[in-house]
Image (tube, rainbow, N blue to C red; front, side, top):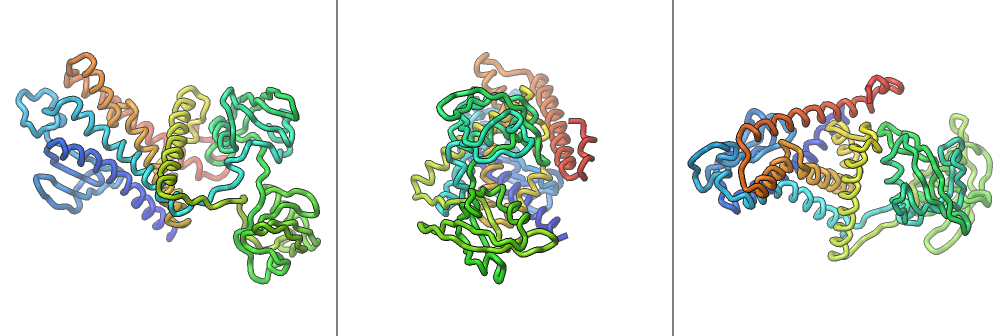
Length: 442
């Protein structure tokens, strides 16, 4: 019950901020250009509370799944005489600015929030920006079947350069169940390897079965546990066990498989290297040493100008990823099962809220950027659809008839309803018991 309430609260916080910022963009630009604003509403439907000031009805409405700003005369396409403060009385470039400002405000919010996170200090896995050299291959995985080797460096995927593990994860993750071509450096040779990815996790992400040399960092040590008795401390990075390199994805399996056997750990503590002896205790037939771990990470903290420039780079990267995913979705390279709807957004919002304020700010930034980009695409009903019509009207120097505009909006509305139903069904499918998701036809 607590988690349901928490999920609802998190969703309202995240969505409330996004909607307010978006609609405020329209409102601000409209006021700046002296357009009369009749309604500024958070939510749709029946008015719950509000007040009126300066001719504008500010309100909170019953259905918290969006919001709107209603300008005077904005849908009176065939009106002959207009007041100078009506939306349709304004020049096309003025209407363009009012329409574009909603999505632009969401993009600016993403840049601002990630700048704040960068100033505060962000923890990032160390391997993510390292060259993509394979350090582990899963038995029976697509990587093993394709005869990839430990030590191979991935230079390109489907002709696109991959300089870091982040590039590789994005490229493979967005291509589930697809044949891809990897350009690989092995010793001093360059070879091409074809590999068919699998679809893993409830999000149907592409999976190849290889990872980099990701070391294990200790986050927490339970008091009185074998790790505590052996001298392991938070911040220690585990490099080897019994003389062999052990990476993050192997660590817990190795511990579980060696109950009551003394293990020799080589760890890095700051600039020092230490050897510790730890014997996992047996619990439920498996070995445990009492630690909470994560991939080796580093805190990146920036000054104001660097934090801002890094935010611009990160937002550019994420925007490119969103547009690339849309392109792959249209071409069939990406799976529609990767789309998330309001249920998934609410669930992740709750997880981000529990993880702390910086995680929540980062999540709001990610969703805000996506909302801003998608809202500016030329889809009828969305701002981008109206902007597209304005641009075409500007080129031909003639307004479309009210009937054509009405038909475009009807088509766009139907498309959005179908997309929302699709996304919600995707969310439901992810939460069905194993095997039941096959009932969903995509």
